[in-house]
Image 1 (cartoon, rainbow, N blue to C red):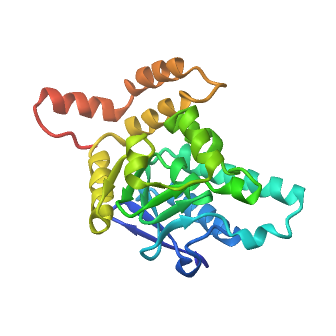
Image 2 (image 1 turned 135 degrees about the horizontal axis):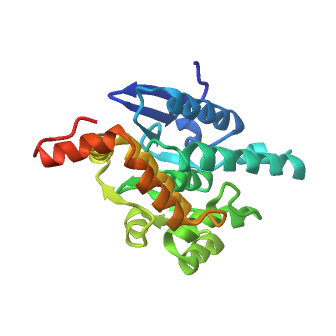
Length: 257
């Protein structure tokens, strides 16, 4: 498929999705959201893909927010639909993905860009990255799940401070508060992300998918996370991966999942 505003490449079981609007600091306009949705669906359906990396083109930005120029003519109904679309992409296609999704935050991650990164299962950032949710300075609030995910990741007080002041923080500050997994020199960022995914790929993909779902259930009020864990734990006993994993452990060899 041809994408207008992103690059899509599969290499060694990883789908690399690069938001490609460097001249606009990779801002998420509606076409980019459409491209992102299509790329994620493609990655989920591709049996060769075991993990997904999302990053931004160029050296300045991961994604520096939504494209504010498109907001000017939106009606209240249009804005509602746009927010719903963002929630669908970030929640159903990223957060609930059975395949691990990692954000390689290579620069500014602001507004919708930080919301995109927070939807991913892990966030690795360049030491030059800046993070923030500046929406209240526009008379808005984060509309793609940012109020909820930031609160879960860093706690109510820190989330409110970031959202209400609209101030940016450094990648190091993000790491200290639990928003970022690791901070790395820019030149080593992607290598580290690939290294982590390779480690995950050496494990059971069935167990990985179940673990992602169980962790997600922790924040889902419609599900009992403990019961989800019990169900996944017991169901995995029926899988070939479990049989291979135990056989490999007892045979003192590496499993072949």
